[in-house]
Length: 405
Image (tube, rainbow, N blue to C red):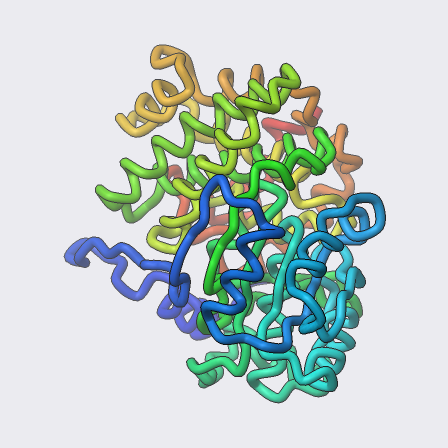
């Protein structure tokens, strides 16, 4: 099974229209992000941002755990006074389209003029999809499906509402004007472009992320590290991106190890700094196998994104073993071991954090691996941007065999 060439071409023109031997390097400034607040206090600073931007009817989306077991959401809502039109924690992992459609109706009916998104990657992406659906007048599942990147729709670049985002995890989704909700009728993800989908403001509050469970924080930081390594080991390298991404790799590695030791004073601001460094260049270069395999396996097998990312990151690094590219040494040096293969460094890091390193550990056996290969080949990006090519079913099979367990 393959994706039609024309669909892949349309997708490629959106993401990386300047790629090629003679192409200029580009840096994609996150479209619509006016400011970033670092070491912020969200309960104080979010109301100031709402007032500064002139919003009057904020709608809050958040995770269920954050909403029901901490005071974080209440503190922000209280700071906003009586202007909040609703608070919803019905998001769901992978942002299922059923939940998105219900939320679009709620936001539209409430007359909201800004979304306040507090939580991890699913919440960040959920806000983007609601923003897109309200702007494009989505009412049904088929209308939402028609917005897929491979359909090449003409989108309104002046959204009816925007977001202010307060991320509580480290997978960098707050930085991307794109996302992949799961179609819960098919268990497959669809790829969407969201004009000005990056938050108008991104608020990094180190106190809030202390509420994130350690295991979740570690797994999402591993996902952020994977994204940052992909920013360096890309088929279209970019000088500015490489500098920022190597700094992100260094900070992620430092922060992850600090978090594994329960040194929260070091870990949380370090990981938020890493998220900024890695996230700001997230859309400027194409990513490879590990990034997009997560989009295939996680919804198909009903496994968390970040657990899947741990194993896919290791599989990609093992696939690179023996490849002669100076960037491999740069990444190893950023993690403090310039003379060691990246896969050994990552394996040791995953074991230090008690994270999965094999497909078996995330619940996939050999038969399931074979079953997922056609879905992998059908994905528009998995086989396109790998510094060591992965283009066939056998390539995918061999790459996954490195982490079979």
